[in-house]
Amino acid sequence: ETGVTQTPRHLVMGMTNKKSLKCEQHLGHNAMYWYKQSAKKPLELMFVYSLEERVENNSVPSRFSPECPNSSHLFLHLHTLQPEDSALYLCASSQGANTGELFFGEGSRLTVL
Amino acid sequence: AQSVTQLGSHVSVSEGALVLLRCNYSSSVPPYLFWYVQYPNQGLQLLLKYTSAATLVKGINGFEAEFKKSETSFHLTKPSAHMSDAAEYFCAVSEGPWGLTGGGNKLTFGTGTQLKVEL
Image (cartoon, rainbow over all chains, first blue to last red; front, side, top):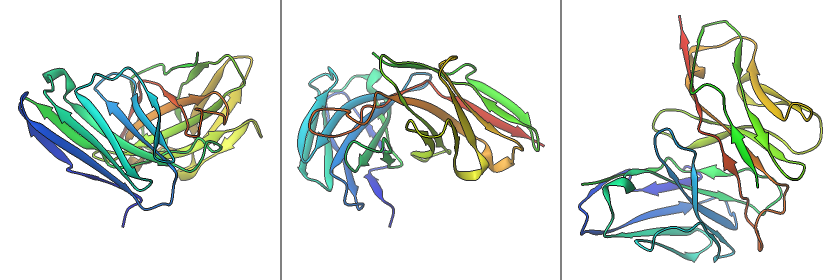
């Protein structure tokens, strides 16, 4: 059982669809993150949850909606996306703020048609 | 504000040769610095980290990095490349452990360097 599990691994959706990405961590961590990874660009921090409360929202368009029902689960709800939103979406977790070590999942590859 | 610059988006070395991946940072406070590795179809994995202790940091798989404040650099090296080292490498900076209010780490990543190892 891997530490951080993301589903689905691949997702293709049209611009009018609604879908969700799921992340689950089995490490007992208290912070979870969504990152967007696009080709030739730095990883972009989208959302951070600490102790199930959102502590960071990096000016992400409202078509991305995060949800953190408990410290082990994180969702990213997607609706009316654009083709430029196609990317690898990475979930990560960490324990506190003192190590800087993030544990990443394998990512969900999203393609918006 | 913090930032990271990785020189060279692609680096190619022969198996057994020295690996050198460059990283320069900008930070308004003493930084914490990290190298992560991403193998194909996988997430990122921590290689090593500098958190204001020894300036020469050793990580997994024989990699090490040296923090040089005067040069604002944190270059990653490995004496002898192996085929299994082929991956993308990311340098990241964090302004201390304080991160975000209420917890969490705000890492700023570089654009990555793709390492190719040839026979």
